[in-house]
Image 1 (cartoon, rainbow, N blue to C red):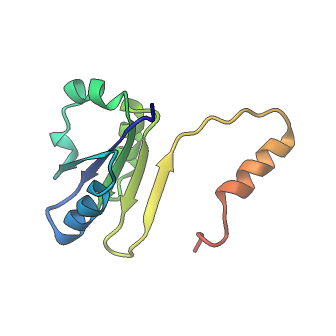
Image 2: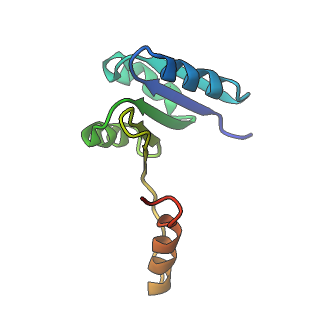
Image 3: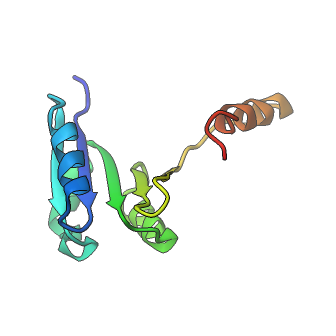
Length: 120
């Protein structure tokens, strides 16, 4: 059985957040949860529910690297996407463990994660 995906959208009540929620909610296996702040997230009770799903946090209008680190501490396999309202850029974070057998493995990772078409 394919693992379902939970999307947690965190941000102010505005048209961008509503649009993000509507687009994501159209996916059949995705559950979308909307919060105005991270303080609304009940770490204890939600942890059990989130642990069995692929988890993506979307932080709309927020650029806080410490917040991404806190989310990774609680949910190490999650993805965090921060969307800037000022410059329309997304910062995408995830932790990945890749086996290092030989120096060529490092080159593959560098080439894969630095596509020039996405860099400014």
